[in-house]
Amino acid sequence: MFKLLLIEDDRTLFHEMVDRLSQWSYEVHGIHDFSRVMDVFTNVDPHLVIIDIQLPKFDGFHWCRMIREHSNVPIIFLSSRDHPTDMVMSMNLGADDFVQKPFHFDVLIAKIQAILRRVYNYNNDQNELKTWLGATIDYERNRVSNDDGTVDLTKNEMLILKQLIEKKSKIVSREEIIHRLWEDERFVSDNTLTVNVNRLRKKLADLGLGESIETKVGQGYVARDES
Image (cartoon, helix red, strand yellow):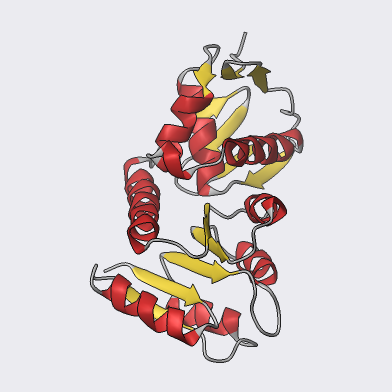
């Protein structure tokens, strides 16, 4: 049974979400003291976290930063605010998806199922190490390392990198990447992919690989080959 941590202070919505998610056999945990979010996170050790942006004490962005200091667990943000900057901020902090309130529960459940299937099946299938441009790609731990150091990637960043490396020196279209990441591109902003790729490039730059992913305008992205 997958464990979900729901960080939501609207008690009516919280209980409705618990009821709906429990029908899908998810074990749902919540927060009662919003000053102890990380204590609950550590005790529950969830497979996925759903965070509202507007919370008492500290906002959802704060707790996302705290979680990312310790874990790459998938995170979905919820927001009732209609600001594009909220989505950009969420993706920059390493969130896996963003859901605008009010939302249809079928959409939320579809996103949860897609992320869990992608993340945990992916990790079970990828236990090998791979080398690329002198760097070691650790699929299991979502890490890239070389003589310049080590960087930790989010699940989405690693999936993007893996997809590009699989077809290195060949163009991978934006549509192909989006479909593999989120399975149904109707629920994804094109800007979300751009944010993820830019964040991936920034991390690779710390390893001297800042130019390793090229943009082909109007086509997609290419990972450089050894040559």
